[in-house]
Image (cartoon, rainbow, N blue to C red):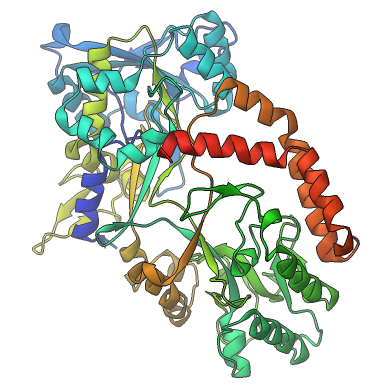
Length: 589
């Protein structure tokens, strides 16, 4: 069946694709440039880069305009031979498109050629890329544009100090189009750029960005503790409004054998060793050993929060009464075996419930987010991502590159033309517009290439040959009446119950309080990186050890000062200080 994507979503995608440092972009030669040959990629020809000359055998990059090839600038790119699975279950690689009869790649080629650019590609197998790029680095990194995610921060900064990487902000300011400059410096891309700035004020790599929108606002995904709402319904219980009511509900599940297996085995499956993956945010706690306050911009630790002991005592009570198991256990089967009364996950997840085996005749299982008060006068927090989130897949321009060629590449990635091609393909080939102006994707096509673009973005994005900007319409997510969740067996009535709270959070943001899901910081200096590396593992290990043992009752709260002293001696305060400095560099606090 053909499926519709909302026209508003399409417009949002096109607007967002002004590469926030990570466009869904694929570089293509105009037919004259070389790209690694064959589906096995050039990396195999070079023994995974062992000799430092990956991609030596190349072939033409598809059909394109060849007449003006002599006037085209060239960008030589080292990237991964990114792959995906089409609708027939077949693995398709970027090199298949480059060296085959690909309409998408042909369009990409001609688009770049019209702008004056062709690409030469060396594509390496994903599992060989780390070795290859490091070997190429030792040999001099003789490329123009490189996927650098496998390189450590220290290595990258070393390249900058040696003059081996070009400042991208200087390129788009001097050679880029106004729209590109606007996006990186004032638009949505500027938030991601802030996290890539070095001490000298320059940006040397661009990264994937995920832009979440709800109406006119940017809004990130969030996680929550979630309870079996069908079990509450079965016992005639209301959603808990306080943690005392939450305790009583979990207790009632066990006392009433709500799963019907004759055992008192209904349990909350929550993390015992971390402040994420649990209900710590209901007590107003941050969700990592060092976190940034969403409102003040100050970095602190849950260990210093005035409510941390109350959180631990609540968890102790659940554990002592057999109502709590460790959510970090890799071998847990509680969800599938219909025993998990409570979990922690993304608020809109729809993948847990279809795995649950319930007795015949029982209502369809589903989890709903729990947002209840734990401490009088303390607002429960929701751990959320920024509306614009920096993800992985970093790319840099080397000192070998023609800055004007790099600027053309960034300009194209920042265009609506490119966004449409990367996310949806070509009108009349992979989609069409109906009489209402809504996009209809050809999801029933037998063409492998169309199946790929309908399922996922183009293969040139992510770790292929360029970063991506992904725009997620969160209103579409909560308003859908049919979707992947139901296709997997998620109950429709359960989905409607699940999204009530989620929709209210999106539409009434000011009613709720939030915790930052991560400390979004500027790139560390070499000194900062080395210092944190010297102590973080021991600090994190001890933090987890203390928290788990306190909850399990093998440590006593009476020795609290000793535990805090241990963490401070292992570098807790130094971690907070370094994170604060990096956060301030990014956000100017």
